[in-house]
Image (cartoon, one colour):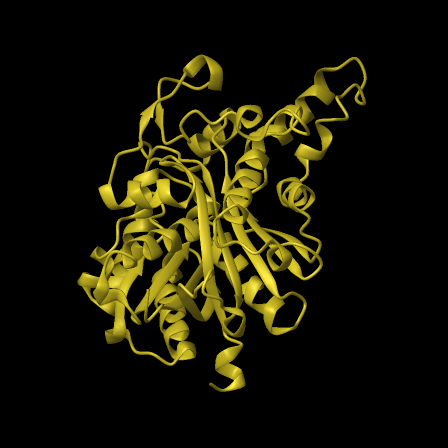
Length: 368
């Protein structure tokens, strides 16, 4: 094996906190069963109109993580901390390399917690004085709060990065993770993403989404991928997929279709594979016309069969910045049950309404 091949980044583990429950097993079982996760929302608690959403069942931060250190922890931070913990608690985990000085964390998000930001700002405006705010809540209003808490909870002392990029943030974080490895800044990267359900996010989406997708229910959750060089693979943490390439573009309006197709073809070229080698293509299923366009582009490039081969990420609702890690988790869960997937090529794409486009090319593990 050449040094270049030995150092290629590979995914060696994953976990999720999703509307299917907590942990990789719960998510994989829900994906395979294609179980519906949409449910009525408690309108009084969430301060929203009569609606439905894809919530993590029974998720309460202090009940899941305990009372110590969680008094002022917001929901998106709790989701992220729980997801990272569920990965590090897996039977094959190696805490000595997956945490510590040489372990990095990259977290994808849209804005952090919109609810925390708005609630904190509101308390400053409504108080007798602008500084009459709860100082314990202030860290939640900072976008990188969730990533920082993950590092504190589990002793992840390497680079700690938060990337805000909407629906494309997950693939942008994947690219960032591979760069941390290739430049020697980390030996292991936990590449995560999280989105919470909240009254603030509901109203922001309702007023900004437009009339084309008014009925798309929001989802929430967090997913995390464990990424390292192929040379560090162990029997306990076998390679699940090799990251061959990640490419991105920016385009809006009438330029989106051409830019997205160029992005996909560029990623395939960088990976050294052809479109007819693609076994599965997983779009991010953006609500409305953008999601339809994304599927049309993938079908035009790869054919219809790869696009239909894995369940859609939209089955767990609109999870926005958490889409890509969930798309990859769905791919890995599906491939684990299909012998024909071994060694095959998979595409993952993202398309955000603000113009960010991205595509990753993976080679699924040859053996299981």
